[in-house]
Length: 228
Ligand SMILES: O=C(O)[C@@H](CO)OP(=O)(O)O
Image (cartoon, rainbow, N blue to C red; front, side, top):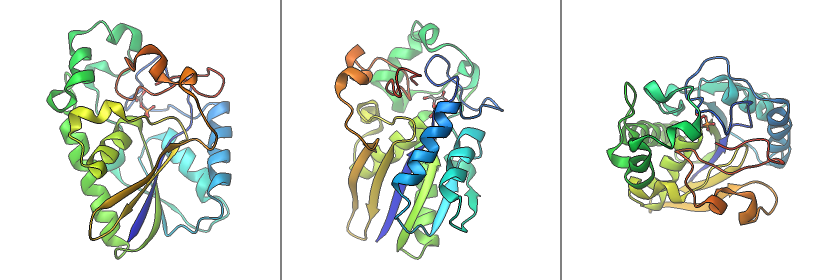
């Protein structure tokens, strides 16, 4: 059995209002760095066999916080990079919500190809393939952490739950939250989803506005410091 800890990066100054996507140079904000440190603390008792990250700065910095003092280098796997949102990259979410494609992103993500960008289905394919490879690389045992992005994490969780990709907006992935999936020869077991280390009730999260946030979507956190 291989245990995957899936962590979304901590907050950045763009998290929430802007679809950062693959914009270079998006670093953790002060709140995000605090979240990354807290995340590292929450799993400090867990022995990790590998720490893997998306190449983007916000994930690398979050993963680095976890790796500190462990003697375990952060390994980069491009397949955990954020969805290629193409022309949507860097745009305000409230503006994107007016686009006809927004409704498709919400209702039929499996049919979405972002203009000049990537298909949601491709995001899931490459991310799930990466998870399978890492499970094998670890010899089908051990524990590893992957630091990635909201939509990538949701796509991996949907696959593990056996949900069609069109259902993936039902899953939440908040900054610095942890999801745990155990991969066994029988099936994956999703044992924890979006654990933020403390109880978050619906008034703090995306459900309050009907889950109509984009892809990634996810919840106002940390004293309203941002949503995605
Ligand atoms: O790219 C972004 O802005 C959001 C989209 O959901 O994802 P993340 O913050 O997880 O990278």
